[in-house]
Amino acid sequence: MKKVHIETNKLFYGSPVVLIGYKDELYGYNVTTINAAYTVSNTVAIALYNGNHSFEEIKKTGQFTLNVPDKNQMELIELFGFNRGKDKLNQANTHFTIGEKVDAPILTECFYNVECQVVSMTEVGVYTHILATIEERWIDEECVDENGHLIHGKVNPVEFVGDSKKRAYRYLTSDVQEVGAFKRYLDK
Image (cartoon, rainbow, N blue to C red; front, top):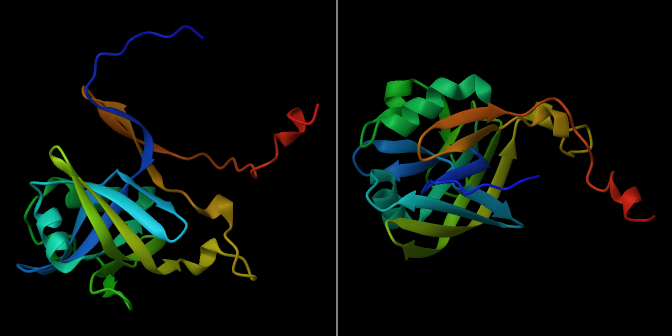
């Protein structure tokens, strides 16, 4: 495959869209949309723009929730992402509970929710990378089998793709393949 140079200062190659819930001094609780998040073992890493209201509030409390929506929550994704400094939870009229381990909102309409306690914050330019421990995990019961194991085909996060010119959402297909299924090619 031939490679070409791409002129862009941003390249989003497919990362999950997540909704970050936090305690808000002005509105009680609030939410923002981000696409810079991942988990490894019992840690979560997210990145927030330093000028955002959500960043200031999470910096004060040291806690947040990470909520993973699916394509049925597209209006929430955009409402929470494009309304800076507003009372977005009341504006959305969405359902939430407060975490058991952290004082931040869990969006009940999202299929996966994680309660997080901040461990460190590292400023890099105009963004801050936040590392947090996972204090509790929640998932819709329809996403797990009778043994409590994940049903992979039920997990359908929204993906974020694009460049500095145009950004878009992508959705997963119903195809699921277990890790190791292609290993037979390594054995030859």
